[in-house]
Length: 313
Image 1 (spheres, rainbow, N blue to C red):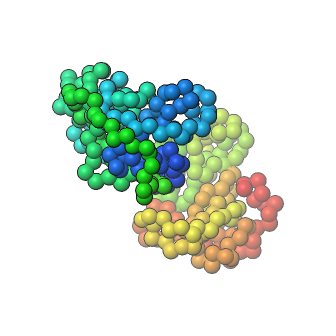
Image 2: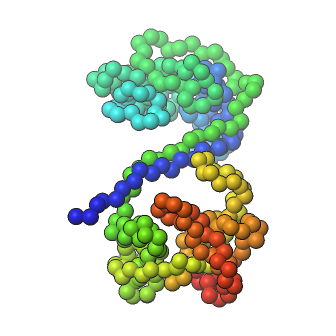
Image 3: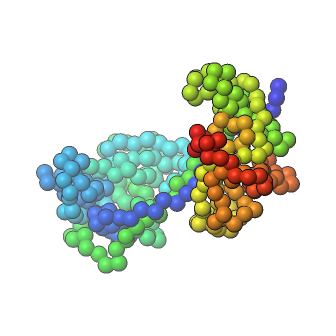
């Protein structure tokens, strides 16, 4: 039986978001240990607040302070916390309707076990020791059997307000290629590029997908393409990527390898970035021990005529 290929992969990026007046006040309030909601035209108080009424779509900015105590409306136990979640030990995800609010806020509840959690139980906010104006300023909720907390009567006006947040998105997963992709990867190990031809439309897919997305039939005929190809389109990258040891600016382009029915993407080097052009003929450059070409460089051939690659843009 052939070896089953698999590899751990991570997709990660920071997402920067600017805040409107309502969200800005809400997050600034958390930094100051104040929970704010927003009142709708019919008198409901929404927490967390939104800037437009979900029923009427009217803009709403009437900020209202609510208590840091509340009632669990529903919950689910988390047996195995994941990286980046509020607590490192098992906890409950809870929807909490804070006193003074008409909607529930999702967060974590620190409890010794699922037997200690129930719908209707009273809880209160446990504030983080260090706060910066983010939902994580609420470290979690904790069980509470006291009275409703006193309000400060806050108007929602703050100095040094939070104008934006950075949310870090990350996806960890294990990729295991199928038959077509495994054959493609195996060919790359021998410094060859192989696609698969559709038996109906005769288009050669690189990388192969195992089936033709146009005709819907399986592809099994392997076809070696390249190694040279044509730049069909490109972009100049001016922002340095994390953990990528390439100086900016550099060029990333779509390259139609000779014999392929569609273009694949790759970095283009060996030429000043402002001299890269559509139709440029290129060849792969391999480095020692690499599993795929490091980049593509001009091969010295005359530029390809536009008509030869216009269908591959």
